Length: 140
Image (cartoon, rainbow, N blue to C red; front, side, top):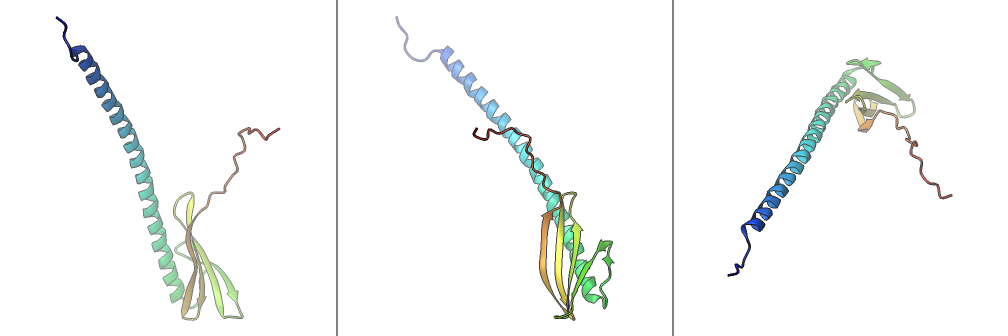
């Protein structure tokens, strides 16, 4: 007599294949999650450092507005001053460090009793260097 249907051997092979696929997918998920966690940690550190620098920059702005004469440095941060005699305004600039490669650059137009924020942004401080070490075919 002939038996029909799927035997025990083929069911075992399918089960082993399914378990193997699940194991590979779980390993891939673990690696991706670990990388995402590291990236999120670095981003959180950058955001925290940015807000620290922003708070220092705000305190420096408050000191500038309180002062009769703008000093050369406040809280250890050098202040650059350019006077504009025509409008009676002074352009004040300073930089607050965020990390080794980023800084908060602030530029203000300050007059008697008023100010205007010209620039308040985070920028990279590292100098960009072109990497031309790869030999690329130039078409000849």
